[in-house]
Length: 150
Image (cartoon, rainbow, N blue to C red; front, side, top):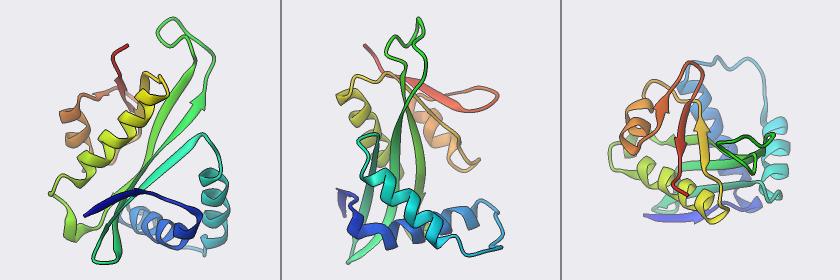
């Protein structure tokens, strides 16, 4: 298995995995959103505020995960105001239960730590919540959050 950073050359894989994620979360395919997804991911991948990983095996992408760095007003618990938002976490069903998602989350946390970002948050599916809780994320009414040590 190979973990690597996504590039613009990977847009087709990224879009396909995103659509699989949305369908598994219960969204009904009601229109073609390829153009919108292409524009979104193209803009994000060329931004310094977004990092996405791909996991490959046998020349196909089997999992992905990303972190977006978002500016909020500074607060006492987060003086920089920058927070990391984990998103687009998806592992193909044939590869689940092998620790891939955990490794992807750890990659996002390492990226946040390298940027000195301490507050990480995400919105999780029910299936993902046990993994995030095991890593140390706490659940509140809206999202799950994690604070990296200073």
